[in-house]
Length: 323
Image 1 (cartoon, rainbow, N blue to C red):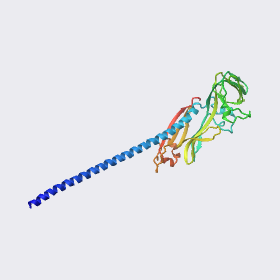
Image 2: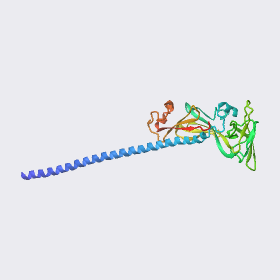
Image 3: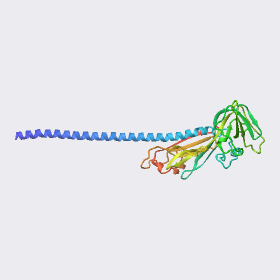
Image 4: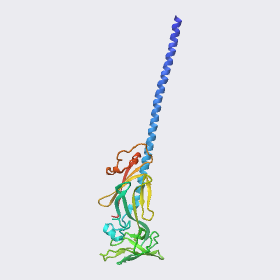
């Protein structure tokens, strides 16, 4: 009997030790599983955060590209050009041809992007420097003026028909012209020893006897014009520009959902608001609300498909220095 109790006691101790080992292993395994699950969840969250950060960066880069495209035209918008609508129309007298039938060097209008969007198209007439300067002052009270230059402006084209200068490539600008800046269109060019002599015509107001004066060392600028808007193309939205040089509308930045323009009442400041997306399309809507910084009045124009992307609203204001 004593031997039996000794054996039971001996095996009970061993079973308890085995049970403790099994329990310890189970607890350790559970803790390790929880920790591993937590680590995996943390890694997944970090990867998602990295994807979101990259997506926001992509959307930010798209907005920056739009601002970069607009910066140079807006910097020289209106230089050497009439600013008032009446003066603009009388300077070109081409009411049936763009961009000469615009209201002024800068204007904002509606754009059709599957629907009409207000303030969605911007039209900019601007000057491009030639780095070619006037050798001697020129003055005229007639509608023809000759200008001597220290180089040949290769981007300026002569008009074969003296009645119609229908391309922006025919027109030149001189920012220091007196008494008022008027665009000139070239009808003849002659190379000289020091550069070239250009013959220009200008639309002299009928009600005015005044002429024009171009001072020595004034720089010749080329007239250029650009329209810009978001256009739906191949089931996606992109920022397009139209330079009026014969190439038509050209895609410049993809992944742009919307762009709106607002001109300050003073006329000296243009605000550009962009709504761009990232590259990752999610299976469900992830941007159901109005993105931070995007005007509430334009929210209804956000397409449903665009809400499956990360959306980013950005804005920039450009000073119109020549107004």
